[in-house]
Image (cartoon, rainbow, N blue to C red; front, top):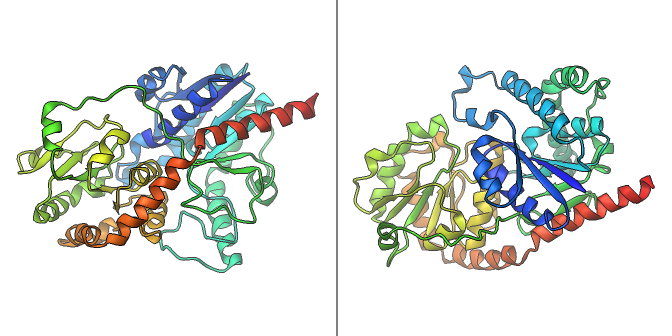
Length: 412
């Protein structure tokens, strides 16, 4: 059987898909459809690669006033559907990340099962509100459900015309239902893969067995990363603060970077930087600062740092907690607020700091809070054990196999 995985987005979206593909390849023929910049990552893990031209995530750090994101997304989806129709002709199922949210329409055309990947709990429930709110509040059950439904239908209204246009012109399918596909009825029929830890988000009682909390899919690195002599020397003795903004760097962050660095200098701590797209060369000559290549996996670098300053995307948060490293979140988008708030509420880091609220002293204060709060370290030790004990990849593969077997037996 062949499974096609559409891994659309940043490295944080793609890398867990590679981990899942490696595990699935023990029993299936697996292909990953993703962007050119991840070709090496995919093929180095012995997975078949098919290129999806373009990547909307590369535009996220642009000023939205100069960006028609919906128009760009339509052009990407059009090309990806055409690629999918050719590449997935012999596929028995597809799995897809949120930025390829039209994956169900492709599966409908191909008449095969599909599994949406969920990177935050955005399926309607009465137990907590939509993760796309940034205020860190819990409401009444009815209001919690309303926030989920409002978020979904706001998105659906914005893309419905595009989706129907692509269904007609590319897939030769009738128009989609007026209310879309992911309402109350569909919630109980779609097989969701929730790629996050049950120790961070408790599965709601109003979610059925078709929604699987697998745990986060960490990529098992077979290679032995060897640090250069300078980095090894830098990491001796005291652990540095790790300032990591990886593959996504927002234009607003660039405007306040000097405030952050001024605060970090005042701490007197060593600073390790993974700059992503941000130019930090002017800070390279500061005492106790080391800039590293962003390709060093978190698995190898996080155990050697005292804390991490991060946008708090799902992958970085799970990697930090697995390593027992406290988090200072500076989120840029709603999903990052959700994971930053989740870490804070569980006593695993400090309260997320909005970009507009970063003033001199804010980062300095957060660093001191982590150093002075022994309970954070205690909580992290417990959470690290829990996350390391999750058999997430086996959980995901077992869920996929069980549902494919059930579908196949029904069709016999």
